[in-house]
Image 1 (cartoon, rainbow, N blue to C red):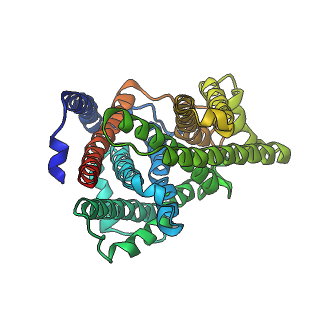
Image 2: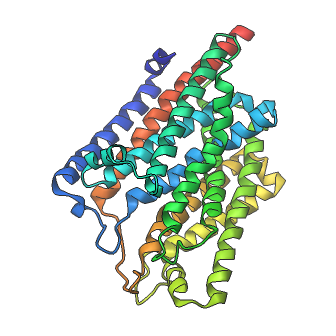
Image 3: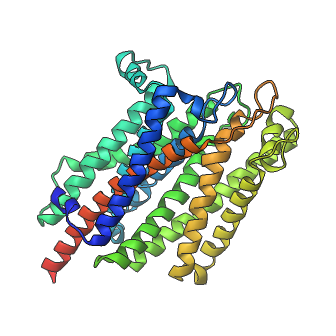
Length: 388
């Protein structure tokens, strides 16, 4: 099946070439970072996790969202999702690949990642984050490939794949839960010191991931002969509607607890993000935009008439994706570091090299995603052709 990734139209080759060009630019700046150090980024003594880890945090959620297809299809026998489950699993593969790459580029010396393997520390949350990420990547590669191969050959999947599918369901939840524990396990950071951080991560994940998958399904329908199905897209849209509503509810719960308790150490982080603090507020317009986008998306998705209009649905999915990306990909990280535990405000702004390296990683992920989707869609078209 792998040969299908090397066959395509001029538009397909043009898209892949453009992604390779962006990857090349990002890699060039990464070589500069490797030689010079993380001094080319906007990170500092006070802000030690920046744009790279923000992308990692967001993409872990996108990867975990594959469970929103796997669980209904395999546990609740919702057969309609059988048509697109493979797309969700391949989206998870591309997302975890980007997660791992963002960890690599965040390390000043990437060889240090071997220390996690050479000197394992099971009492460290970071060790378990490495275990669940790589395990989830392997699970989705094996499950997705074997299921697609069985579909192509018109045979039943091997019996040993079923336990792996069931294992992948709690594993998907665990990858984002463990990531949340990395943050809320730091007692000096009041913004993250909340038991509701993992549920907030999961709710935003189950909104952002399916919204991206809906957009990808609409693109696949337009550019290929494979139709993911109207029922499938509408079912995903309902999942996004519930998830983004719960995500905003959790955020409002945080706001109530923080300001009703009137603890300055906790309030200052929210003040910095939404109204500015000590004359600093670079993220204020971003955070209000994020909140506005999420509220708009809730209105568009909850109302049946707008949700069922696929043009409006596409707009709603874009607002969900961008809104959650700002909230979790910018605000969640910077908001935890600014102000510092000593209440000093040292703002973080990513530099141009940092952004270009991040774009290179995103391009790598979309390169992998495009190749995997090309394989899956080609097989789906072949099977449909045989059936007709």
